[in-house]
Amino acid sequence: MHELAFVVAGFFVGCVVGLTGVGGGSLMTPILIFFFGIKPYMAVGTDLLFAAVTKLGGTVKAARSGLVDWRIVISLSAGSLPAALLTLYLLHEFGANSNAVQSVMTTTLGAALLLTAAATLYKAVRGKAGPKQIALGDEAAALKPLHWSLPPLFGALIGALVTLTSVGAGAIGVTVLMILFPLLPLRRIVADDIAYAVPLTLVAGLGHASIGSVDWDMLLSLLAGSLPGIWLGSHLIARTPERFIRALLSVLLAYAGLKLIAI
Image 1: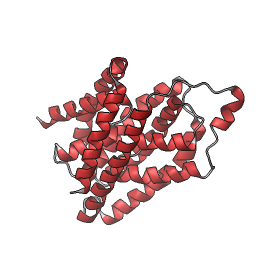
Image 2 (image 1 turned 180 degrees about the horizontal axis):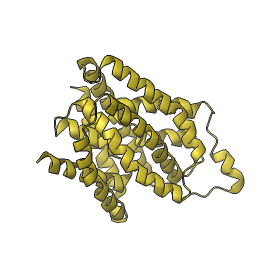
Image 3 (image 1 turned 90 degrees about the horizontal axis):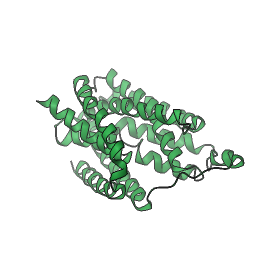
């Protein structure tokens, strides 16, 4: 019976991701914790591999469309992957299922959800950015961050946050990229965010698997629902008021974040 419920949860989250581009880790992890009673460390580990698989398809599609700026992906990964490995080492040393680590996970997850809610609401208020074109001479300027050290630094912060909570590579990552690369069109920012999240969530997810923090049966059930859900959501996006969906999603994330902090 649980398997069917996981499929339904995966389908729901997949639809939201297809509609808004947000909601993978930020929705799935709280759902697993609150509705299914999954321990935070197990929910985080399973959700990381769930995100890696779902975002891989988006990365392939974006790369084929020429939207992924690999230099940006590499500069972010230079910070996020070492930070993920360091966080995994600390989880291994202190024990992912210890009470102290569980408390840190839920509190940090709550804070991450509040940040994601704020970023999602900002995008809802701002609305869609059109497919801005960059003149040939401005391409180098668009790919240049405010400072060369900022992408690896923010990548490291997001890498640690994602490894600890499975949240942060979506709306928070997009918001950070919008700040670091203000001349880059939004659709390319989203593509870069999805692309760099794949190696990050894969490394973090496999690291969690190595310490026993992944439920493989649950993962397969979630994927069985999410993949058709993403397909449906992406086809309904033209008929759905995206601003309303994002605003509602930000309220749900804020509620979940406050509830986790209060645990």
